[in-house]
Image (cartoon, rainbow, N blue to C red; front, side, top):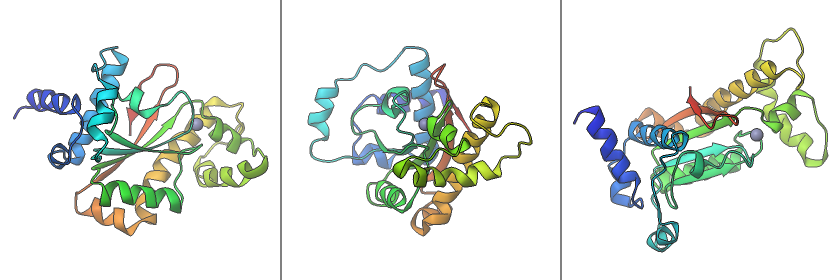
Length: 219
Ligand SMILES: [Zn+2]
């Protein structure tokens, strides 16, 4: 099958409710191609018309999502919308600053090992408030401890100038580093997922969503 036919076939699959059978036929690379194509449709305003209420009915008995997205809680980055996906298509773990902890790793193990997803996408975004908060060392209630999770990304960025949220270039470097470190943390923190990666059963990839354009750049 040539690439164009394969992509059209994936779009055809993606226009319908995911079933265990269709999920089985999707490789990790296919899953990535589906998300890339979905974001392209979103950018071109050519979203697949979906009967979401019909999809509720069709998925009521079970789910077989092809991918899991670890994203920020930011209201501007709803994964289903920016990747033009329907109900039952993708898992979402959303937490301010899109990092992983044991609970999110457990959720991803469920998504991939138990529920059969083929791809984990760690999705950061531009102008991330959590990243800015970490840059500025914001202290507030439980937020203080939560922002500690972004410290490795903060420390990894070489910046001799302004290391505060007032420097957008620095903020973006930290956001990029955080996505890359989170991709690594998923494999370092979960032997279950690491084994699936090593066996080629899943892929872990990073992406950066631009809140101004709607475009996702994959790493
Ligand atoms: Zn954010």
